[in-house]
Length: 271
Image 1 (cartoon, rainbow, N blue to C red):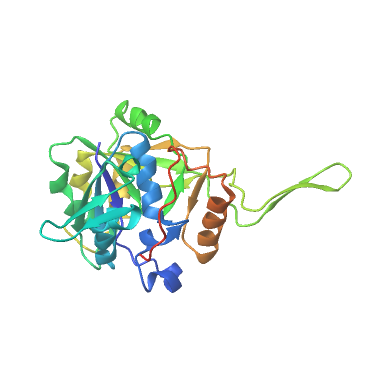
Image 2: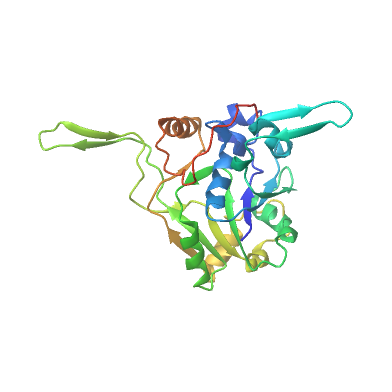
């Protein structure tokens, strides 16, 4: 299945970062969070991506246009027959990436509507946001979706806790402290959706329409919205604190969402 990723929002709660680059390009480690999301899907064999661009979309275009230039060792030959040879090719992603301009001010429903032509005749596709990572079992979510008559199956996740959990012993000593726990209460939409092509019947020709409003309400009212429950790790990057958290997790080396094989760290570069 093709993977559609919403990359066009302005990310106003991260304005110190998004003043200069789109939210999906904010780094976790030496790579943008968008790359981490794509690596998750690619791990399960879904390597055909459609990126819905909007705010500062030119930076995402530039990143992929110069991807090998910035992530490989390079030998350049000059003279009458100039050429460039990229090394480290065994670590290069074998992805197909479609960069689609879906409008500067468009909301999510309209952005999805705009990329319909790039899906070809596919009956189903994968859809997520460009700002959240998790150890999501993508194949299991697809299997559940295909067993139903759903228009959309979203991954239901527990919202990350706002405060740390203290583990107390019977003697009132603190036995452990979980700095950023996952809530064990209700569920929220964590993205990582599986969609039927029928979803386009619910997306009006209106740039102001959000998928999460009238379209989702109508799909829900018709009993066509399902949830795939995810009890593992999930973390969005909506605030500076969450950006710091994700980078600290990455630096620790114990990264719950890093389900792909190891590869050398790329050369740092600005994006």
